[in-house]
Length: 402
Picture 1 (cartoon, rainbow, N blue to C red):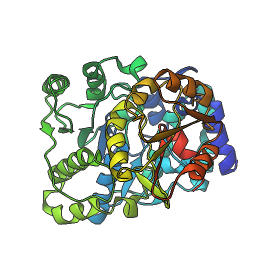
Picture 2: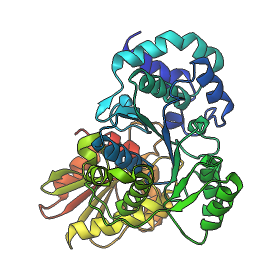
Picture 3: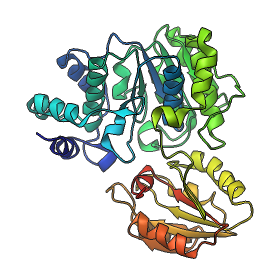
Picture 4: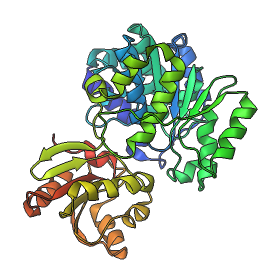
């Protein structure tokens, strides 16, 4: 089996939330991943681990941690999702992605067993990552939850530390329709006696985290405010920085100067992409994977500030199961032109549907089948001093030809 055949099999042969959403046998629960982990010999079980959950900011926080630890000389395996441009981004050590040969050999060796038990795409990619990390003898593993926490496949781990980033209204059909209910699901990663760093301290979610930590006998640490530079742009990154820095100070107090340096070298040390990422300068063109209202409450003012009074061209798409209306309400009408786009992922809403929804919110624009078509139209219309913003979904950014 070649690498391409292995990846195609993973995409087509098992339940896949990234491809299908929750409509096709979406699986949650720990019984399946626990059995699969046991079958494979518990790869990575004896390697110290950090477990990260939350609505937004998980990926940035995970890569900030990895970058800080890399500056300390540690070899760190990072499991994260979804990927942007390459399936192999889901398992990385520094800037090195899991090798194609390892992916092919992993699937080939266990394909019959996988087919027999019908494991999910996420479960298999998690185990692929853990197997690779063990073979590479990493010093630490950082696991990012896929969606929730309590029933997320990554929750089979026994971490040294847990981190919970911000809590917003996303995946409400599975996690609950209030921030308190969602916080309870995310707090499901809290383990007995294991310290947990919580980034967001507000009236609605604070009691949830206090109760969950007390029930588990887990030390609860609220993220401190660190005035440290980071190369990840975006006003929302200060919260992610504070969470990562609080965790690193807790774990490695004697190496502060090194991990602080790492917070400002995240892109260099980890090749993280898609976070307020500049892809052109004339006109200034930014892409960002933020995909819900909690993200856009920061992205919209940041775009306005970057445009500095100039026109903003919004190239936007959305997954079909997202509350796109809540994003639309945040978008400025004045000084804006909208380009509604589809994407190659079957989970994305059609651009025609988005355009109709947007019109109902007073945001009118043309719609395009492909991201590059929408971007080309924006570039044609934009003046040199304007801003082009591309986002609304990870799948939109993933379709960019960079």
